[in-house]
Amino acid sequence: MANSPSSKKRARQIERRTAVNKARKSRIRTFIRKVEEAIAGGDQAVAKEALRTAQPEIMRGVTKGVLHANTASRKVSRLSSRVKALA
Image (cartoon, rainbow, N blue to C red):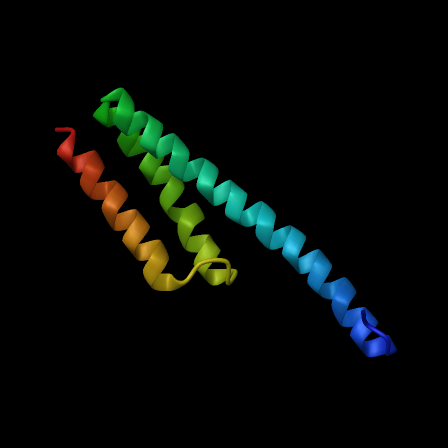
């Protein structure tokens, strides 16, 4: 348990940051799931639109430090190749 005032403050900051990061990750997963559902539906137009809205959200995760850049790029790449395969 944190004892010094500075360590107590750090614990509070980490708690807030964790909540924010958790919400961001959840939001990213929701966007990815929408793309995957559109792919499963088989409609390329809907899937393409879902990917177009998901991509900036995934990349925002990188700038906010929630995802690693390579992880985000890999996810976008794999989703886009699956959307292309629907044609």
